[in-house]
Length: 146
View 1 (cartoon, one colour):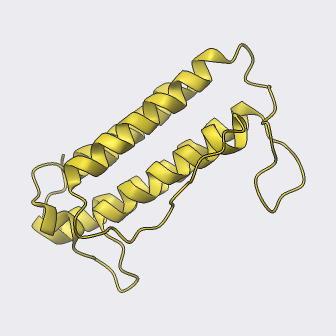
View 2: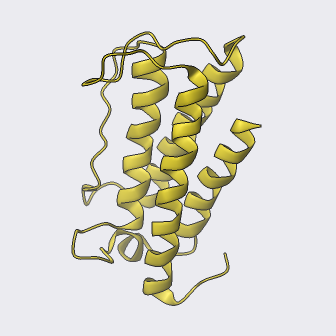
View 3: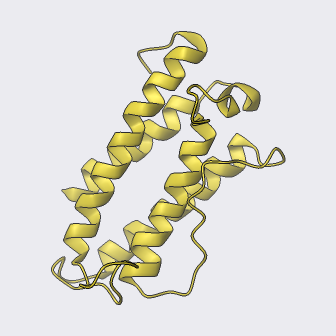
């Protein structure tokens, strides 16, 4: 059930960026510089961080920046995001008990966390960014029902 909710907000992130040019999706909509592509890149790194680095203990780089290089396209970012989400889902499905603790604590914290807590956190994190993405999309072309 947790993955069903997480996958719904993951899909919303991707859908919100569809039918836009790369330039439109790259355009910051707020003074902080946040863009649709930046959100996708950030969430890719967040997925990798929580499921692979913290929970599975893999030695992976987790770029959580929202600054997208000019040579990276929307298609590239969406493919990377969907790949990382599939990896995260595989980790969840492979774990027999969502109470299983992470391999390491989140950096800066003392305690390891359960896979259930990580998955719930990812629902919250992704949903928050999906709401931001909705607003950014409306600023770009007025779309409110995607």
